[in-house]
Length: 107
Image 1 (cartoon, one colour):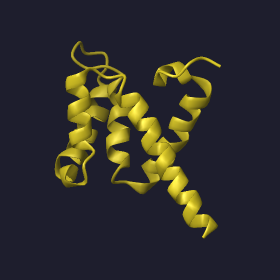
Image 2 (cartoon, rainbow, N blue to C red):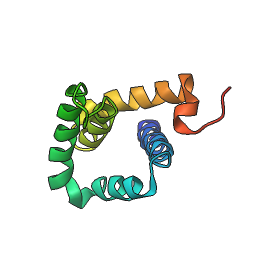
Image 3 (cartoon, rainbow, N blue to C red):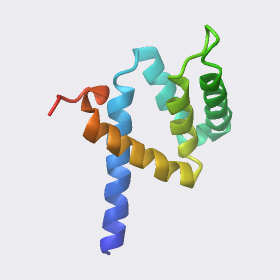
């Protein structure tokens, strides 16, 4: 029972942190991210995640940027459990060390 509670809490924390980040995006991008994160959008989410990661690696080109890397990993992490654990840790670190990135007040 305790393990189930911890898993539920971890999922709740992850979703809360992701929502804080999504709220920082422009309205149109928020809508797109919410659509991509739906379970039915897996067929689009996986290629989009790969595209964002590749685009982030091509940040030296004018159209792409490093901002694409975390978004790509976040999209892929919904479907790839090892990436989910890594992004959970990264989101927890960002919330603890850089809360202003999530729109939270500085401690």
